[in-house]
Length: 344
Image (cartoon, rainbow, N blue to C red; front, side, top):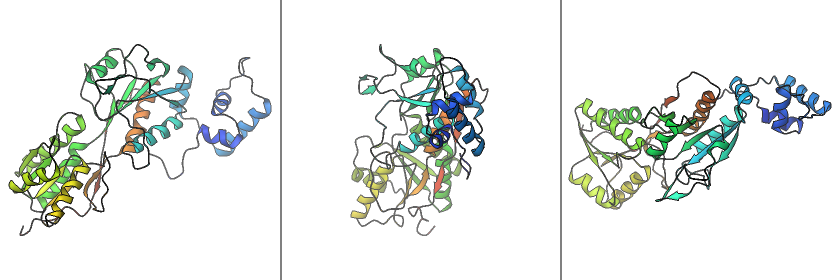
């Protein structure tokens, strides 16, 4: 995402010279009209800082400045703004902020949307989408009808997370859940596991469906028995009962916290993880799950997804011809909860 030597930004120049980022932008764009008055000394101080740092304007940012007001909206379908650094959505927001700074844009948090049937709605009589040049959509589940309207009205937007077509292709930056999940299945098979179970919804949000698709395809390709165990309304004890009754040896959990709960119940019953039951988590915790267990699985490239979502949106606004759908690889986590089947 960035090199070891961070690119100098307009904010850096502003901090060095004690002026606003807007002033730096005006100097860079050579504005001298009557409506914009910058003292000669201030202008020279900014120019000197630009020369001394070797600042080079981002070409996308320059094209954005020429045609737009450089405000990007961020809309969330569910509460995502973090109370602490451990929050699941925090890395996404960090990436969004960092890339917005790089391309010289401000962020507008669209927080006035009404809640209808427990969900925020983009479109309402007082929506402020038009205040921004384009919008980043963030949340586990996005409303298909609203996505279809955004596509139909050609509103510039990018979803953080892969989305199914909605009357046309939806611009997005997503994680490669099928490939990451399939890799974990292959690792389990290589250790002798032949009776696997996927614990979770496996439907609804595209991220859940993608995980289950990767699990099922990899299990079928390896010729092993891969079962899906939905857990809506079930407690960890009930889930563990079903896993043991069906003689499953390796559990793939859609939600990290569910894996932790299953491991705790197993320990209370005298079962050892991974000796008696292997455990793989398919992503980062989306809800609090305090544990000392080093769970095997993978990490979602959350910060990079946020960064690239802004990058794609900025390219769209600047008239770039690049792809508007990107899928990023997840990072494997070796952990200690996947081991060979006894006697395999």
